[in-house]
Length: 282
Image 1 (cartoon, helix red, strand yellow):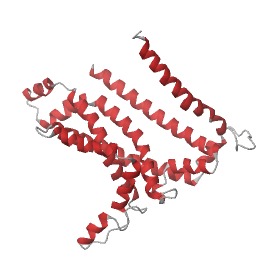
Image 2: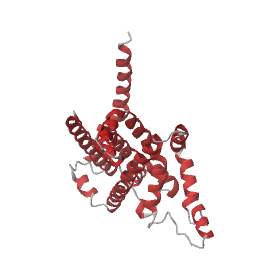
Image 3: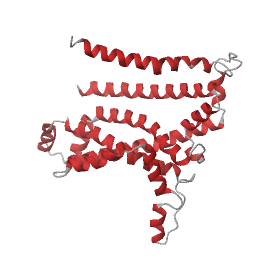
Image 4: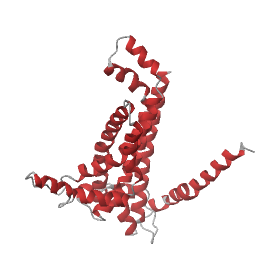
């Protein structure tokens, strides 16, 4: 009887996935092949061609790529540094870990309200700068917007990735470090030859989770800037949201399929690279 419980639980989860995710995703493919929901004229792959000629989609794609290229590496580096620092602490390790994890439980609306009051034209940051005789800019304008959103993303996600890295660091046997020390390796070479080598599976997992979480920053962006953000903050989610509100279902479905294909291909490449690297370590 106990053996049937996991199968039952997986079956329920799989049924929910098929019903609420897979079936709607496949059903929406019909919109990709038609010009609009009213005439339902078959146009083949024309929607894919015209989508890349649409300036708002190109802008959203570019801004999303720039944000991810900036935020994801920074998040991995800073979270790994935080994990190493916390793991090396002799006292108050749990307290510092808890502090880093607090942003995870704060609702997105509260997060947006807090950071808007920090980075707005008359926000807390500019008031502090004013005390030193410096007139601060509008940190949510086109020039600084990507950097500001990156700070918000790092603040909210470093703790989560730090916890993953700490788990990976704890799985590295201490004997490896002792052997490296006997061979005369210093801290730097121990980090390069032991820590980074055996932390590769955790790095790949953290990278995948960071990519997934990078798309969730749209909630904070939308709460701060609304439906019409600065040009540098116009993301793919803005485009898809606007297409949904304007009932442009063919453009919406086409964008979703392109985004899904890119994410699946990227994650498949990461899993393939991780699998090959893991085989080399055996």
